[in-house]
Amino acid sequence: MLRRAAAVLVACVALCADAAAAQNSDGITIRMPDSLATTEPPDVPFGPGEDLYYQVKLGIFSVGEANLRVLPEDTVRGRRTYPVELAINGSAFFGRAKVRDLFQSWMDVYTLSSLRFRKDQHELSYKSKKWYEIYPERQEWDRAEPDIDESGPTISELPLDEIAFLFFIRTLDLEVGKEYTFDHYFKEDGNPVVLRVLRREVKEVPAGTFRTIVVQPIIQTDGLFSEGGEAEVYLTDDDEKHIVHLRSSIPVMGSLTLNLRQIADPSSDGLASRVDNGG
Image (cartoon, rainbow, N blue to C red; front, side, top):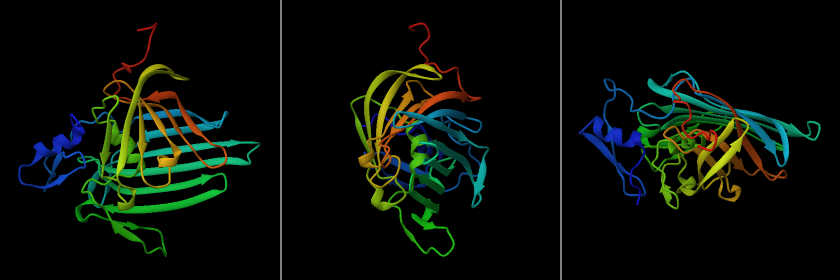
């Protein structure tokens, strides 16, 4: 049983007694406030200014860099958001094998729901550009590109995209050996989202050596966390849960890995999970 849902979801319960109720697939009841205009956002382990840099590998080749960051607050349709983005840039074989990916998400600061999601992918011969507007209050999403008429339902009042999900899992109490399911992916056919907590592991990356907790997120769609990709995400085993290593699969090359090289986080307490002289 899930001991505790995300801290942000618990905070939503306390914000307003008269609210609409929702429930995730683990049976956790979530109450969404009618008005958040006079309340402070709940505490989460990230915020504007967090900036992480990674070494990128395609297969066995070190080919470039990636950047995962939280930008200054922005508004989407009048709602405060955390804009977050993951940019991946790499090439191998004298530039013939390229990865140029940009994922951007705008997350409501109160609920972490996705309000907008963009992805621009160029992975070897595969190219795709998509822009979604997401409406949690009416449980719908729309494609926003010109000349594209596509929309659909969400099955949750707390919809998440792939990048928002990375930040969402950082708010969870994770227990090794557990498997959690969530019906929060913004596209109905991407659910359920499965999160397997595999193990604890000491992981060495260019930024240092860290105690980590290893999770496997699975979203029933294509992308970084598709079922066939068998992605693994290594989070620091502390309250901040920074991502120090990420591994996924892409066509032809077989694997895409990100290894933390540098972190700039004004809210960090010093990375308590870092292994220093065997500590």
